[in-house]
Image (cartoon, rainbow over all chains, first blue to last red; front, side, top):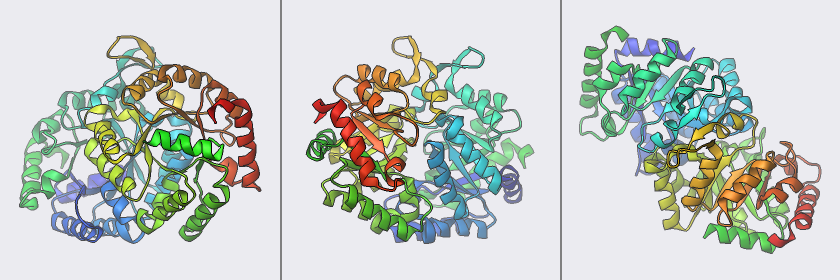
Length: 256
Length: 256
């Protein structure tokens, strides 16, 4: 299963960095070439590769992003599609099939979809195909607070709590393979970590470029760091990845 | 602006049907051919065309879905991309640019993204480019209740209310060009219509195949009906579209 697959990769590479290939401003040809090159150059410093619409829309899947997934696999790296699924169940299933068929090992979903004929068909498909599902529990941008932080009544307990606590509870119940909480909010990482227990690892985007801090996130309970622009816009991407990896190994050696 | 563009189209065609091209189970070649054919056959019975990932993922944008957008325009129909945007602002902007550049006239966004560095950059881009934005206020699947129906505290007024009322309020404030409320929930259509005023027209998916009813939705305040499978899986798609159009013209002649 995906949870074990990425953990094995992290131990092998001694790194918890998920490289986010959010390249922009290039022609489709350059986008593809640069993505393939980055995966190769950084392959020994990262544990997985994450792709978003920055690549799927200009490149397409077959013969496009498919090549990046293959490149990741060539270097023993799982590939995650960050599609943040939030449509009706039948559509979600079509979308997930398209991504899994070109080799993606996991994808992200939004809990704002609900379960019945929403996310349920995607979790079922993922189990059938041995793929992973990662939920969004608290995103990394400022506006996330307006929605993930909304005070909400848990329909089961009647308790008032911020929405993200409900999403953490659901993620655990759904047996998600991971939960996203922005690195910019260490207190929330810590709270969510408590709610998820040991079962659902936390993925944190927003390190560096978005202002998050590696050490603080790791100490709060993050398991995997999602890092993109901070690495690939650097003059020496390998040096930045190496620096982040070094910090993580120092702060959380027990994870490796 | 998009709101006027689709209203003009609806008056010209004497129809408020937005055709959802959610075709599945075909090869990419057949998907494209069938989509182009459906737009042509139904062009005099519909007011717009809506595309979802059923088409963008297998066909790609350039040279793929682009041709469907061009076909829509050839028959004076605006084209809506139902991407339900819910990522961080910089990513949303990249996604929106990709869709607008191949000619889409409007796209859908999820209010679950929040405004600051979430949806704000997309609304700004749409205004700059003269494009439209349609928000999701209450989706059509059963699981929508688990999230759009969650009791939530309005951070401005302190009032407890279901989340969709907050989204209706935000949609009006953001000057959205439309708001989606599933046709399966006429009472909610009516409530949301009251909150939106005359400024934001309601788009309702879920007619027919998902169990919604044309008459009830229209009487409750729906302005545009989003219809896909009910029409294109019928033996005679034109006859079904004609029937829906006829019902709408009888129930809500004032709209045309």
